[in-house]
Image 1: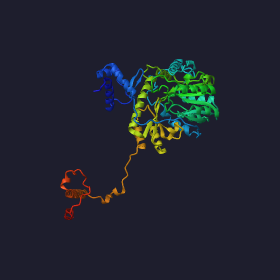
Image 2: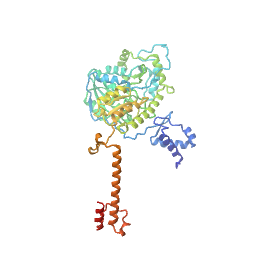
Image 3: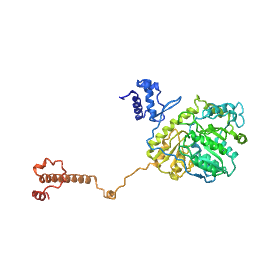
Image 4: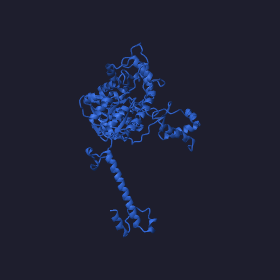
Length: 525
């Protein structure tokens, strides 16, 4: 019995974990339900939950309850900021085709996400290029939770965030211009820029963001025409940039007066409670073109929105010409998803994705052990996983052939020297076991102890079972005879006064000389 009652809650939790009655990602019983189940007071159960939270076993999510976390037993992978700039080589259309082939791995794998509850008749046409005012007001309310004050009249809705990104790049820059991009990021960003003829300069970010001094030197020494900033939970690292770093970036932007695009498709997928601050939420001068949205693997189940900021006049014509308007059914599904109390709300989906990510991480770590390690997750659609050894081309091709909806190779996302050691795994997968099994075949190598040449037996000369038994019996008899001889020799070699005092002495100790030894040795041959 626990010495303190509240430790009984901890003991109950650990017992449930050992029996796998509770697994990472599961929701904990409510405080009152567990209080009634264990026969403890409510304050005692609250204290027990606090202990579990401090040790990282569970996590509290506002208006949702407590959830079980995965406590990793392996050393976490470190994602360090790069110490130099890389101008990406233009390989023609190959990166674009690779990016397009693996685009499905970047989105929500749910079949029901953003699907309309029922078919609706097109009562009226949407406002060309922008969408219905009611849908834009729903998006505006959603952005307020991120600290972005956006009037509905300034918002543009579309079916594809990449189409909005493409139109923005083509409008604000010219062919041959240099664009600074923070990586690792969604590979569609870099490949689209290269396909449009822009020079991409990659600045690698770590867990705490980028080296801002290096960014300042780049902006000073190179003719940069556009900056692309992936959002707080950008694919795939899930970085949580500090407020100080955000404010320093805004100071740099206001000083250089350069146009900036913030690519933010995962701000609703925070793994921690509370509203998340974006670059746009601090943008008082409207220099940032904010592109957000939600994507799903289903057809017509994606939606995006854009805040052009001070570039409204330039981008308005480009967006109108691209004809990216959502249908009435799509706008209704989007409005429903943005309602916090809806069954299909983004809030509920974010909670499900977080719980599933804990299950995926626990399963991969259990199956692959020390062959993988994970960067600390803050949010987003994927886990950034480091492998113990890089996969060769044949292995990676085989994996992508079967799991192109589940993984993205690190070389498509990062441009560091160790990019081949990294893999992005989608955390919205319903079943990760096939992927874990395939990775185990390529990573886990059975360690077989080498056999000495003297121990190798030719099968043609292998003795029969009867001969083996006879040899074993003969060997046992010889060993017994030698033991008897050694015992007699030991007894005869020691005086009677020393026999009892030296019974524990090793029989191999050199005996004292006795003339009877010659006779004994002669009799036993």
